Image 1 (tube, rainbow over the protein chains, first blue to last red):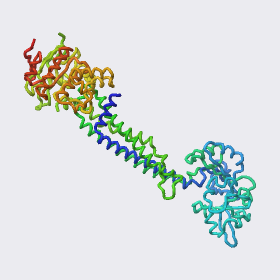
Image 2 (spheres, chains in turn green, yellow):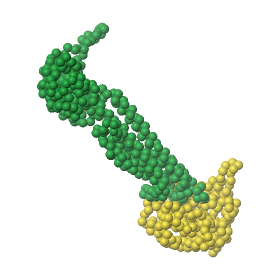
Image 3 (spheres, helix red, strand yellow):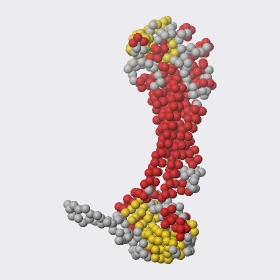
Image 4 (cartoon, each protein chain N blue to C red):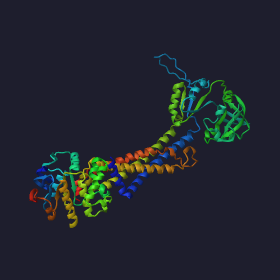
Length: 401
Length: 230
C-alpha cells in the first residue's frame, strides 16, 4: 500500500508541469461545480425568500362545512349540494390547540387572525379592502410590516388601521387621517391611519388593511373564535411535513405554502435540473481529462511498467499505482478547486441579504464535500481504464526495446 | 551439485499456420547451483527467448521447465510473479532502471514491492549492495544522472537484492566500453564466487564468455554444451 503510494506520488511529481496542468484542469471543473451549486442554491433561496418571505408557511383554517347527504344506501337520486354560506367559517377552539402548535419543534411563530372583506371610505371615495385582524404584538409576525413601513408605526389599537401604500395613494390619505372602515357584515367604524407600508406585492399594497383582533371582532360580528392561524417555521422547507403533522394532531385543515406556489416549485425544480446538468458536464470533463492524461502516462511509462513486472510487481500492484495517481489528482484538484470556490464565493452576501440586481450566490450551498468526493470518485473511475492498460503491458515486449 | 534449473524438450513457437516460427526446438538444459555460465549463439538462435522463459516472463509452447523443484510451466501468473520476485534476478543490456528513482530506490525495488513498503532492512541491504558495486557515492543520484557503467552496476545490485538463486543477464556488457564491461564481469565473478549465485549470461562477446566457467551454445533452437573451465 505505502510503496504503491510512493510510486504514484513520484510519478506525479516527476513531471510537475503536466501534473500541475492536470490538477488545475480538475480544480477548474470543481470550481464550476461549486459555483453552480452555490448559484442554483442561492437563486432558489433568493426566489423562495422573495416569494414566501411575507406569507405564512402553514395556514390553519376550519375544515369546510359541506352538507352531508343523508340518503339511504342503494337509493339513486340526482342531488345538488350547496355549500353553506350563511355562516362565516371560524376556528372556535383555537385556544385549545394553539399551545400545542406553539410547542411543536420547528414552529417559529403563530399568528391568530380574523379576515374578511370590506370597504374603506373617505368622503365619496370608496375602495374595496381585505381586512386582517391580528394580535397587536404580532403585526410583523408573518409579513414584515415593520420593515416595509413607509410612514407612521405598526402600533395598533382598537381605533387604528395600517394600510398598504397603493391603497392609501388611491384614497389620497396619510398617517393620522381618519377613514371609515365598513365590513361585509355592514358594521362601520371610524379608524385613524397609524401606518402605511409597502411590501412590493401589488395585491397586498393595494388592498390590505390591518386592524387589531378586537376591531376585527367588532367589524365581522365574531365575538369568539378566529378565521385562521398563520404559522412561520424555522425552516420553510419543512412546511408540507409540518402541515401534515398539524392536521393529524388537531384535525384541522393545515395548508403548506407549497400548495399555493406549485409554479414556483416547478421553476425551482427545472432550475435545479439545469444546474445538475451543468455540474454533470463539469464532472464528465474532469473524468475525460484525467483518463486521457493517465492513458498518455501509461503509454509513456510502458518500459518502466514492464521492468516493474519483470522485477516481481503484480498486475494488481500496477493497477493500484495508476488508480492511486487518479485518486491523488482527484483529491488535490478537488481540494484546490473547493478552496478557490469557497474563497471566490465568500465576498458575496448571502441571498437573504443580496441587494436588488446582485448575484444571489450562496456560499453555504457550495456542496464542497460532495464536489471533492465526486471528483475523487470520478478520477478513480477515470484511472481504471489506463490502469488496466498498464497492467496488460507485456514485460517481454518492452524489455527488448 | 544440485540441479537448480531443469529444462526438458523445451519448444517455443511464434505465430500460427504458415507464419509459425519455431525458435526453440526441443531444448534440454540443466543449470547447477553456483554456476557461472555463458549463453552463446548467433542472433535469432533463441538465446533471448530461452532467457525469457527461464525468467518466467514467457511460457513455453511445450516441454518442461522446473526450478528449485517447482514445475513452472503450469504455475499461475500470480505464482510466477511471486516466484520471479523471490528467486530470479535480471540484468538487461539497457539496464532498464526506473528513471525517476534514485540508485538506492532502484536497488531496493524488488524487496519493497514484495513487502509493500521500503523496510529498514531493505534499505540497509540496498546500501550494502551499492557499496559492493562501488557506488556508495551515488546512492541518492537519480538513475538518469548515472553513467552507463554505473547504471549497469546498479542493475546488478538490484538483481541481487532479494538474494535470488538465479540471475539472468541478457548482454549485460553489450552497451558498455571494454573497461566498464570488464569491471561488470569482475563484479559478477566475485558475487558468483562468494555467494554461489548462479549466473546465466547471454553474450556475443568471446572474451566475456571466456570469463565464464561454462559455455552453452544455442544453435538452431537446441542447446549444445561448449567447453567447461575447471
